[in-house]
Amino acid sequence: MPRSLDIQIVSHGTPELVETLLDDLARVPSRLFVLENLVAARAPERTGICVIRHPDAVPRGFAANHNRLAAEGQGELIAVLNPDLRIGRESWAGLLAAFDDPSVGIVAPRVRQPDGQVADNARRVLTPARLLRDRLWPQRRRTDYPDASRPCEPDWVAGMCLVVRRSLFERLGGFDARYRMYCEDMDLCIRSWLAGFAVRCLPCEGVVHDARRASLKDARHLRWHLASLGRFWRSDAYRRFRSNGRGPAAEPAGVGGRG
Image (cartoon, rainbow, N blue to C red):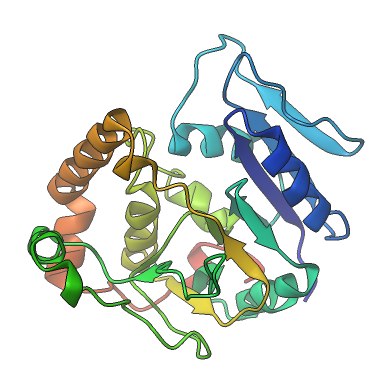
């Protein structure tokens, strides 16, 4: 079933990356929204693309920016894309078709790194014990879902590329803007599960993410990352997810209208 799609991108002074991504999206039936988060920079302006800037010129975090863009759109589905992503037109058919299943709330493609390795964008929920283990024994760290040729239903998918049913996004209140950066994607996905809606990650060719890994290089980003982890582990959603698993049976009629 054809569905209306809003694609939203937040630029942080990287117009060249946004331009390349917009070229990838040129023939995808959708409405495109770009938010420029830095005052001194200029997001690309093209016919048919809605470019937004904060009226007070104060940069926001990932969650607040994407909530702002979502408020501008009306599409049945919302696609959240990082500017440092490459995604071919052929990738969209399978992603959108997944929403034919009314129990699905969030869908992502399996992403690869520029060297062709499978990116770790489909994951199990991060716990303090798991973080400690990965830091103490990094050589033992494994990709949660290494077989990129098969669909999976992970606890969460990374926010560099995901599609969410708008009715569910609005019911959940969007991303939690109290997260300045990091963990807002994990939080949204586990709240989707707790609401009874599945998170699905699908095999997909031609989706590549050139990750910046800012928290490994920038002390400010590292502080944001640690603060977000602390907030996430103190959240009611995390406690409920750890206690009750993936929540009640799906009730799509309550969130979705047309499914």
